[in-house]
Amino acid sequence: MPGKHRHFQDPEVGCCGKYFLFGFNIVFWVLGALFLAIGLWAWGEKGVLSNISALTDLGGLDPVWLFVVVGGVMSVLGFAGCIGALRENTFLLQFFSVFLGLIFFLELATGILAFVFKDWIRDQLNLFINSNVKAYRDDIDLQNLIDFAQEYWSCCGARGPNDWNLNIYFNCTDSNPSRERCGVPFSCCVRDPAEDVLNTQCGYDIRLKLIFGICLAQNLVSDIKAVKANWITHGDGYKLLNKQHLEKQWLILTISEGSVGSAASELSREGPGLNPTA
Image 1: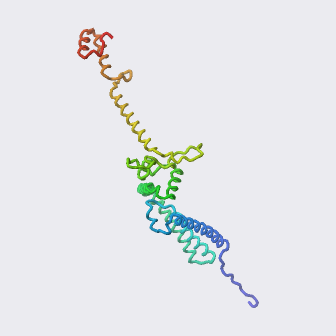
Image 2: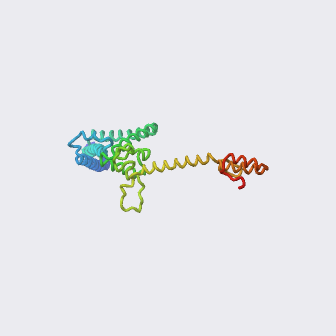
């Protein structure tokens, strides 16, 4: 029809979704960059950046790795999501979504495998913890991480306090000159809420005291068993069964049967230890 024109509206990207994704990822990006900066700063303070081989010198886990890896992943994802949403770049947005999906499925698979192979996972976790116990004094960051974990979960080592025998400063060997010999870190101790000052020496010699207590308990058990071995059961309870008790019982029995003479002669052969007229 003349004088009339049809107007077709082009499809547009929704502003709400676009700027929400942009705002969320810019926060994610900044946090990731902050984590990464903290990790790099910590490595710089420990001299790792000037000597890369120092990364392999530590026998256990360097906690700075957590900041570097987590910060790096967050930075990459935040950058892809932020710039992809702002510039409407489909490649970056697809990379962002695929990366998030991959992380989700890895977490799901890890949870399933941990449930199926829980015994193997437990053994590997114990080995991992023990390897870090060995390196407890080698790195201050690892030391703080182990102390935090033991205080938070109220534990001591992977299986118990004796796991600290793996550490050269805490083992109980006679050749160990350390003051911490046969001890545990202070984070193994149960802290008294009334304490205003943290007692960092509460774990000194604690396992030595435990060993001493175990030895005393075992000796007491042996003594009790030895005493019970000399007891005889009667209808009215337990009576001590020893030589003197048997001799008195035998004497009473012979007297009651009118055999005083034979009892006296028998006692004379046994020795002067008993008086037949008593």
